[in-house]
Every structure is written in structure tokens, then in C-alpha cells.
Image (tube, rainbow, N blue to C red; front, side, top):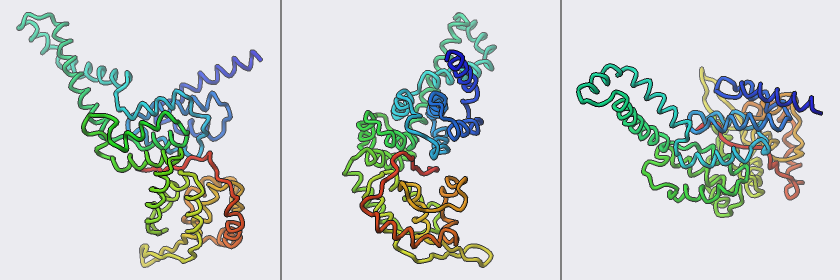
Length: 343
């Protein structure tokens, strides 16, 4: 027992060396795909969350969306995600600004020495005055940039995790009353607001459930749109019967859509086929058979190309009949995380 504990500690300490940084996505993916070690999985997810303050880093969150488990998110990681909405620079970000300012000041050492002699001020005192001025100026610039784009992925995760402390914060963002500072989410206000409404709908808010479903019912159904599955993912994300039943309703349209492609070719796709295949991701015990069982998650992530594949097309009547028979009794997958991968 003692030896197993020591081995686990050594393994975890070794793993921490590989967790941080964008270049370690392969290791993170491997752990989340293969490992059942709850401590190691939490460490991986903590590392992803801790690096997600900036929007460019937060875009790595959905890389692993098909691999996350709710138990991977510690209370600390949830609190960190929620804190990011305030856009207050944490100690790590402040230290980066200080370190960068010191590097910049290295180019002015001789100039500062000369000025200190002219003003009869000690070099150290003048250096600290100028360093503080530079740090304060850069902090204002970086803080303004941090406020201008707020990642929608924070809301998606917190809603999926049913993190109740996030509710008043998400409501405040929608009402534009979270902070008094101007420029909050000025560059992606609409997308952030939508993600907050989706998160609240996921956590049971009936108003936003009805509002969002009404909006998605207005979406033009065109499977030739490369972002076609985004609105399906959002309906799956809300995760209630009303939304899933609307998707099932859409599967009744068996028209083939065409669109000019290139070199005189025509691209064809089937909304019915895409939906009948994609429903396998959100309905438990859905009877779709996969052509390649070992790659079903990768294949099913983008079902457009399979919508007219004979292997899947031959199952559509069976699947449609199953949906009619089980319309009132099917069970929704509440564990899987759905979110668009690009904002």
C-alpha cells in the first residue's frame, strides 16, 4: 500500500513537468483519453484552466471537450474560471508585467545613472520611480486589453458543471452590470452574452431555454454551411427534451441539398442524415452502428461527410422509426460537453 502511494506521488510529480504550455497538448490529450487516475486528470485540467486567462490561451479549452469528465474539475479550477470574468490581473500576470518592465529598463541604465547625478537623486530611488511608472502604465494597457475580449468558454464550462455560484455573475454580464469599467468585452460582447445565456439555460433557467430555442428555430437549415453543427451543439448543450425534440423534428426533412463546389463539381449533403448520425452523441443507447468503432468519436465530431455514406444511409429508416417509438422515453447524455470550437 505504501509503495503504491509513493509510486503515485512520483508519477504525479513527474507528470507536472509535462502539464504546462501549449506544446504539451499531446500529453494532456493522452492523459484525458487514457487515464482513470482522478488526481492526474484533475492536475491536467487545472493546468489548462490556469493558463486560460487570455482569450488566445482559452481557445485551447475546447481541444479536449470530448474527453473532459465533470469530476476532472476541482473546486479550485471552478473558482478560477469564475474569477476570470472580473478580468483582474492575477499575481502571475502582474509579475510578468514587472519582469518585462525590468528588461526594458536594462536599456536605460546609463541614462538613469546620468539623470540621477543631474538631479542629485540616488540611482536606486530614481530607478524604482521609473520602474513603477512603467509598470503602472503597462498595467493599465494590459488591463484594458484583458477586458476587451472575455472568453465565452468560461461560461460554457461553468454551465456544464452546474456551478451555482456562477449564476449571479452570468446574469450580471448579460445585464452589463458586472463591472463599471468601460470596454468590458467590447470586442465579443454578443458571443459572450450568448454563452452566458446558454450556461444559465443549461442550469435550468426557463426564460433563456425558451428564448434560445426560439432563436435556433429561426436558423436556416443548410448542411452546406461548414458551421452547420454549431447550432446543433448549442441545442445539445442546453440538454433538455424540448431542444432535443426540435432536432429530432428537423431529421424528418429528407431533402438532399446541393451547392456548387469547384471545377464544375456539386457538393451534396443531407440535413436528415447529419442529424440522424449526430443524435448518437446526445441520446443514450441510440442504435446507430458505426463503421469503424474504434474511431467513432473522431468520426462523429463532423458527420457532414457521412450524411450520404451508404453504410449510414441504410440505417436512417431504422433510426427514424426508433426515434418515433422512443420519443417520450429516450435518455439524454448529460455528461458530454458540447461547445463550438472557434469563436
